[in-house]
Length: 410
Image (cartoon, rainbow, N blue to C red):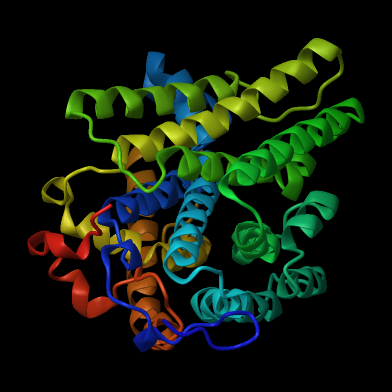
């Protein structure tokens, strides 16, 4: 085994082929799709009570609004899944090669995220220059270009631009700044302490924000608050130690139900998961809600990890593979659906269904085109710097349902 470069960078051909060097789990692609779908629902369904919707749904209205509000926790599920996978892949890399090639890690992340990310920002800039756009949108997108979109959203509010959804990518990029260094330098036991330190620091910071009566948006877009979700993913990776839970479908159903219950409780009825706190008891309630959000994400991952590939719909796996594009373009697709089917003051069930289906269809179409012509060329370049196989390209997707060998033996 040969190590090349000052940071221990590896050449693909110089490392032995082994199960430890393969970690592709199609069930996690399904989780990616579910995370996107939750976000999509939160951005398309009414999240505040309206007379016509409440009258139309009757007794189901409170549950409908809670589900719509809980949908934004799909972002937290993305964060937890990302931390779980990054930690797992880096630990496997260290096991195989004896170190973590930090330079290679950053090359892989850049090739995976930056092409579509900056394409999305360019599209957002074009939309900002069209009638109805504003100079403030362009200035805000400049913050996003240097991965400070979350900070800008927390301090100045959300952009009136469909690319405002990219605020979460900036938080992921901040996580990547330290993730490979921590795994490279610290033992597994120290990683537990590191994850616990993130949780303690995030809760202390959240408590301070509550004392300052910070707004809902200020707290929700705060990087340190959201880092708790990354800590949850790290904990899950360390506890499982590369193994997938081998449990029956009934237990997985309970885990899935527990995940949904945690998120619905975190919604807090008519209030959002994060709200302005005016007394000590309310602050502790908010802290407990954030814990429930992370717990729900962990339960969701446990419900799917180790699920037989035979039970996974091919279309769901594919949509999970293109989930980054789904996330980037769904705001544009939603705005286009409003243009095709103009929004009216009154609620019309048929019109709403048409807008919803149109937005979802346009999102899938744009994401599929993006994956084929924007992302795939860079994914092929990324493969040259891959040490632990985890990202099959388009040509492998058609065989997911008939090729269990693509799933790593852990």
